[in-house]
Image 1 (cartoon, helix red, strand yellow):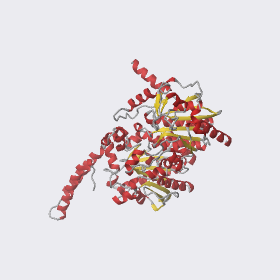
Image 2: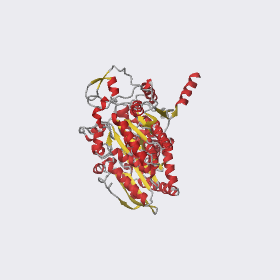
Image 3: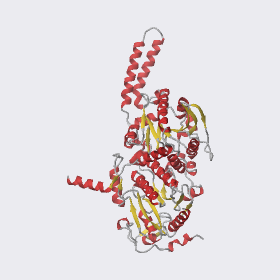
Amino acid sequence: MEKESMGWFRRLKDGIQTATKFKKEAPDGLWHKCTNCGETNTYKDLRENYFKCPKCNAHERIGSHDYFEILFDGKSEELFDDLESYDFLEFTDLKSYTDRLEKAHAKTHLADAITVATGKIGRKPIVVAAMDFSFIGGSMGSVVGEKIARSIDYCIEHQVPLMIISKSGGARMMESAFSLMQMAKTSAKLSQMGRAGIPYFSFMTDPTTGGVTASYAMLGDINFAEPGALIGFAGPRVIKETIKQDLPEGFQTAEFLLEHGFLDFIVDRSELRDKLDDLLTFFQKAA
Amino acid sequence: MVFLEFEKPLESLYEQLEKIKQVGEQGVIDVSDNIKELENTIRAKRKEIYTNLTGWQKVQLSRHPERPYTLFYIREITKKFTELHGDRYFGDDKAIVGGLAQINGHSVVLIGHQKGVSTKMRQYRNFGMANPEGYRKALRLMKLAEKFNVPVVTLIDTPGAYPGMEAEERGQAEAIARNLYEMSQLRVPILCYVIGEGASGGAIGIGVGDRVFMLENTWYSVISPESCSSILWRSWDYKEQAAEALKLTADHMFEFGLIDGIVKEPLGGAHTDPAGMAKALKKHMKKELSELLEMDPDARIAARIEKYSKMGQFRLKEKAEAQSEEESKS
């Protein structure tokens, strides 16, 4: 029997140190209805269960700071937090890109769709770059690409492994070809890190699609994902329109990708930290 | 001849020209002056139309049904072409072709998207939309080139990587990502040309190079104007606006520093003089390849990665805050 079925009894440490502005805006007593099975739980129970439904284990989408808390118990240092996006193409559709950015800043208090932090897991250092879907759909623009590039330089310089937690709808259209080129930029930088012998773990969470999947998400030395996460190149709607038939149950889920050979394993969020500890030990001993 | 919507004024002039020629063929009246005059009018009109094309008009030109595709350029530019098939894992993708060729007495590996020239062939080529095995075939050929120290030339012309169910099952994303990674480190020169449509991941999947050029009437973008319209405007009707907003033309891309240059097309587009276009392209390739071949492989790879590392526009937060403070003061 797998340990994860007991997962919901485990408690995160007390004394959570996440800055108030990144706390999920819900008092502990509030009820949360599971998006998968409809079960209602208190917000506190949900949080203490790694934001997974205690009944069906559905993994709710969480943000970069939630992951840092799970991995580092609040003891981490943010890197490259001074970079921000701006509307250099003067891109306007129904809204201007400037408006979209301002709204995203106000809603999330985040600088952009990725936050990088360094910390320790079992006394072993690691850099984690985690994406936020709440910031313009986790879209990859120049800032996301640059933060990943800088993380790689940092990891090479300090000989520290990198994990990227992907959670993205794809490239940021409002930066047009600049966002497309981030695919080449991040992949080229990863090739440098590969040459330097620094391990790269790609952790895919719901959803990981488009240009993010077709660049750094699929390039891990180890590729793994959260249960049930949607992972793909084209979105399900686009595929459905192309082939003009319904998609089979479970298509493009983490389990589907594991079955087709594109993931090394699937990890329950409650096991993430332990799994990462094992990986770090392996690569430390290998070095 | 096929006339695009914005070329309609030309169509009637060509009709007149045909009529006059028919009259001339009867041998009763001398029409040579009329023909000359009309040809001048056509030339002037063509110049007028083509001098200020919008983004959307260039997108239409890049999709012109008579536009030359990869295999045409291979025939015109190279000698002794041997097409190589298959990715060695799954199958042979017809939307990406590649093989061994000679350009000016030098061996090169040439790879490109291929669209079909007739309804039947368009289906056979899957409209230039490659599956994972296409990208894997391309990588196999690049590795072959690397092994025998031969440069790689790629020709990009795709409306996107194929968004099908089987493409997902076989790892479309992984295939493209792997190419980006491997092309970054390939030890031989890589020279890329966008010869038609440069749509998103499907284009860049064979588009990481030491030098990347676009033909004058092509486009390169993260998304097609139609899809962009449907997502951001929530309707298919704003493709013209989307094409403008995306700033996807060769001029824009060069101005942004995202490509290394533009190859001029004949007035009216590559399809009006395919042989002339091929000749210009060959001359361009020859010059670029000889420059790239002179570089040391390590320096060439370092420069390639450095080029992509610099792509991106962002600003520092303090600066922005200081700036807005400055503005509020004044």
